[in-house]
Length: 620
Ligand code: X5A
Ligand code: ZN
Image 1: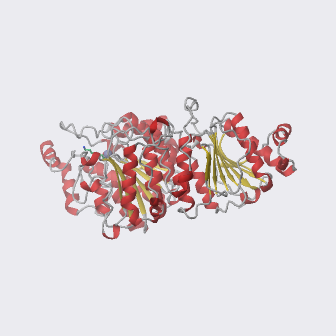
Image 2: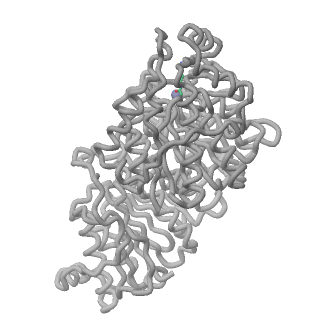
């Protein structure tokens, strides 16, 4: 349905007029660098471009006092001396004669974006704005922020669109205390922020940035703070924060809209954040958020001061909003000890308010390094929760040859292919999904089928031919992901062939997620090239490093906690370059479950996910 990009060139006008080492990093080039890169990549052209408008006095009044708004309005006519004197009344703030105009455009851009998404004009979007907003308060400018763009957008979504549940994800490296103050007693806005904290020794030096600040009154449990007590947090730490803290709460909250305070000072290279996460990480974070609120995600720029990293991260975010697959994440997917401690203390602080944390917190997440893991670090992404006791120490990612390969981007021309035994003319498919006509050569199909009795029937052979053709398209990069149907009686054998074919045709590491009663193919090698995860099988077991099985997790918080706590951590740690999802007999899952699993696995293997369904299921 499309992605909006909201911008106005006038927002490059405000700038620092005097010497101030703290404020000089918030420069006009931040916007031009991001926009130029979006153009170079052809991403801007793929968006619906909206020209930002100014927010009205009433709209600003949704979160700011009238006195404060008039104070900022008056800066338009002040001289440099007076501007500097007024700026000194606030912490880390500069005013410029154009500040009022720019800040009204920044707030207005957020309003336009929310309107475009909530009226169904677009699915999602990004507002490229400055000045940023998340530090600004009812009657105070703070931390380069004048009007609180995201908070105004949230208040507007409630007031004008009647929304009842809005999730704000603040991935800027600073604590958006302004947003926290504005909604701390409001249960209709769930505010999540991670931030550099260093036990209170980092700006803005607030006690209320710690994990035990959880909101007040009706809003208890609707403020979620994740303080980072060390610099250098990387991809594994950010992913763990999403999988083990934010997403369980977000799913339970079930937002109607996701707003992102999209600051990119949390990326590698930024002088403020001093963190290590790479720009690709923001593609994965965005993709994880897209499974919420029917994909209604509105991102608004906050911080981000390293122009190169900022531009790259903005591209990753927009590319993902547009639906492109996320580039694989680099580095060992193992969170550091300090990150685990922060996540655990935030979970403990939130546990009284959230069911999704209560069951799992019976078993604390591992806090001491495991001797089984490489580098003496704990297992990837802290698989936690009762059923994970059965899980093996995580598979050590093999030295990654595929990371050296040219990356799987740009996206293949066809995003998703559906291969049915007989093309179904009644099936209504989205525009980026096509039905496959082709099939592998008959002789080749027969050769692959020969060892399997259940593949002898004509029906099974036809399905196999289609599957092989689809798999080749994915491995050659013509097709990104696919759905293939197979007769129920041939499901296990077809999966076996798909695994062998994937491994012999270019996949270095193959992840197979089998749902229901599907036995692991008997001749599957334990050489670390295949990770077999069985959900809903008979028993819980870690039969080897590369063979993990869990029953349908009804008792342990359900299917979702199994995906977040077990499947995705193991999958991200394994770094597959091909993913097979197979729905076997008796998987007992609802359609939305399988769709959710597939959507969340899209972050793996550059989106090369092939789902195998029983013929009947595929017609639903
Ligand atoms: C929006 C933002 C940071 C202010 C830092 C002041 N503000 N030292 O990133
Ligand atoms: Zn920031």
